[in-house]
Image 1 (cartoon, rainbow, N blue to C red):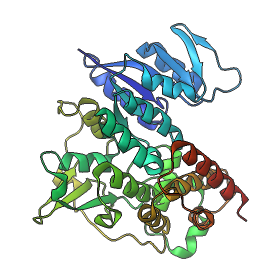
Image 2 (cartoon, rainbow, N blue to C red):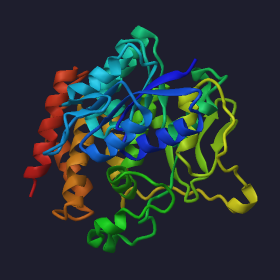
Image 3 (cartoon, helix red, strand yellow):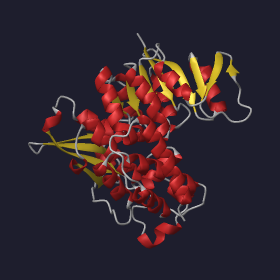
Image 4 (spheres, one colour):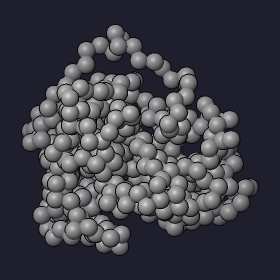
Length: 378
């Protein structure tokens, strides 16, 4: 029997790579639902190829068709929740950017469906809600991020109370060696040239500021039930060691592989089974020396801000996430400098009064406030 999947964000980087994996295992995987934000042309091409029963555009552009030859094209943000709840779906891949991934993730978990999570923000802003929903239904949250997939794999067969420390690796991004005096003048074009990973623009900019790694710290805190002070970030430029786990006896396990998102995607799609594939095998000799160094949080303060949000908790991670998303959009539009991204996030966090254990409606309100706040900062 084929596993039936819904891909939320099918035209993005993660969504396209999920479909690459589907192409390798057509006898094992069936696409039931595809959603995209606004890329109607690519979504239609995908729909015609994979023939899902549910197709949706959450923010359709002017002139976007309302139907395709397989049926209607659903519209609006509610379509993500509808796709996540489809009775015919076994696994929901959440690959939409930002807080928009939280409602369908919660809906899928409430319906008892496994969630393969590629969007960090859902756990960052609503980790307490998602883990509670998963506990109630028994549905698993399976990480797709290469770092969290690595940790998840390293933990197989171990008890969580045996974990001493989680070590997240970061490539350092394109500016890891750029002097602090030059950071303000960096362009979006330069920031989008990631040295090792092929990703969408938002996550690529986050990698350049190290905010991506900060969001992953908060994500790991919820996925693996450890405090932020037991999560360490190290710069590993080669992106071969995807993350490590240190246990209470001093043993350290790591997961290694060439930087290719299709491997963690495949692991999530088939978990707990490991399936033979045609992906390139790691050659340690060809990979060369593997190096590790501490991140410079003075040059890249976004990581420090994320740790602050992780420790304080409550609504502050939602402010961090939304403010960062808004600031990245301003940077990509050429309206602010690279160094203004963390500066505006910090100002928004300073202005916010933390709300403990926010419910979903409060998270949405905080998200909207943080975005407005970033726009208003001079």
